[in-house]
Image 1 (cartoon, rainbow, N blue to C red):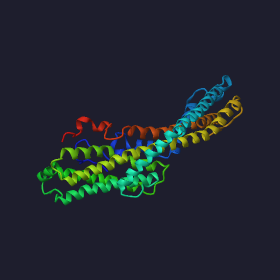
Image 2 (cartoon, rainbow, N blue to C red; image 1 turned 90 degrees about the horizontal axis):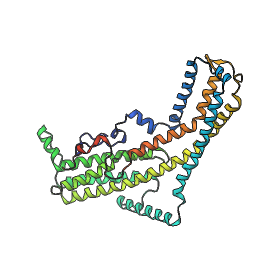
Image 3 (cartoon, helix red, strand yellow; image 1 turned 135 degrees about the vertical axis):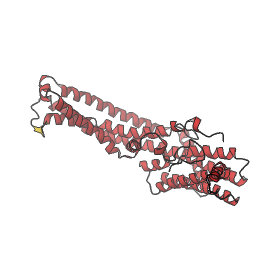
Image 4 (cartoon, rainbow, N blue to C red; image 1 turned 180 degrees about the horizontal axis):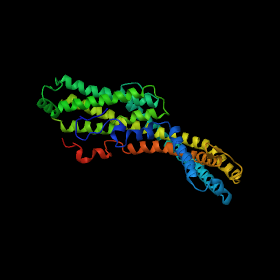
Length: 366
């Protein structure tokens, strides 16, 4: 949903893809694409590049092997890098587990904080308890935000403030500057955005990026700023019921912020644990390929013949390089997604870090 006609100038879009200046195709590759495809793509490029360079080299690889040992040198370097990468996996696991290995007092504080927050959410939802599953928890919060937005509209209707007339351009211009119209438009935008996010979260299972992706598309930080601005700027023009409803809507949005950040943290830790395991699985064939190259490819007569005009020795070396680099491709595919999300969610609360909504474009005084 694009907020091109929002309550103030310079308003960013709701969805994360539309808020940024990066192309949608690039963001799809960084965030939504299957991580196995993202990891495999550079390996295919490396394999193809080695083959092409080998074909363009005026000195055939077989001749180079007879005069020196480029394959063994390359394989030794790859072997060292793989072992270093496995050590990195151990470090990542230590970082992830360090949070889980705290003393009893810290664990109790974490538990009490979590329970208090869930009680606050249950009060917001007017429910006995908040949902236990992360996607259902975020969905319930989004639905609560949509309900609070509808409550703001209801207070405006109860005051007898209907939609502004649209008979001509002058009337539309007057309506745009009318406090009631601005509050109504804001409430409708919040309701639409929250309902869309709630719909995307329905039936989602935690552990997949779909849960976090949907939550990232509720632009709560900007909406907190807008709710506070409308509440204060138009304090004298709004009824007490409308001001109370706006304050309650802002409270709901403020609860969504830490809830999303908590789910994001859980997802990052989940991904890092999976990354550690996947890198270990990828390291085994990588070690076999590099060790095999050191032991058995020192003699150029070991592999003879050609396939489609390409030396089988060259194809084998290209394959060894691609397989040996697979742990790093796995690491890169996960880090690209994590770093992209982290960069776009650096702040919590009503702070705008994106360049497309600079301070001189923000209508923060009226």
